[in-house]
Image 1 (cartoon, rainbow, N blue to C red):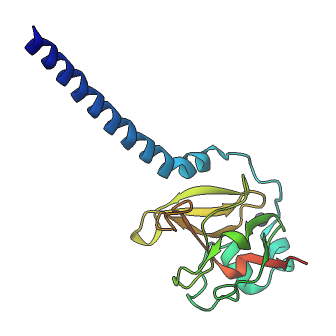
Image 2: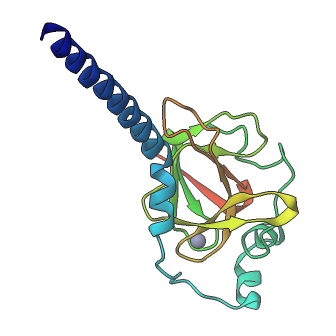
Length: 175
Ligand SMILES: [Zn+2]
């Protein structure tokens, strides 16, 4: 009888162990993908809509090339790359608040890097250009191309790296 009981106990313990491991794994998976799940939910259409000629009037050539033609500035050339003042980063096209300097970090990748973004400030598009699979980051308000987001950011934060073109941003210092 004792033998049967101990077999039952071992059997239950084994399944508890398997269950806890699988729960732990699913928690890790969902937390690392949490940001991406939120990303896909932002389907609100942009509210700032202008013609190409109108954008050319309000943007300099480099910002137009990036925001409206989805180009990328050369690495290590942008004015906010090695820039760590306290303040807020706005979309250069529509002045929507996008990133806080509190989430900016030195990734050494050659572009301004942030580990988080203001809620619902951007939307995400699968980008298969240049033979790569990346997630493009666009301003939710004006649909301007900002950069890309990668999953190699600081692990003690969100684990994300928003790799953003300086020319798509406008910095405003905290007074
Ligand atoms: Zn914008």
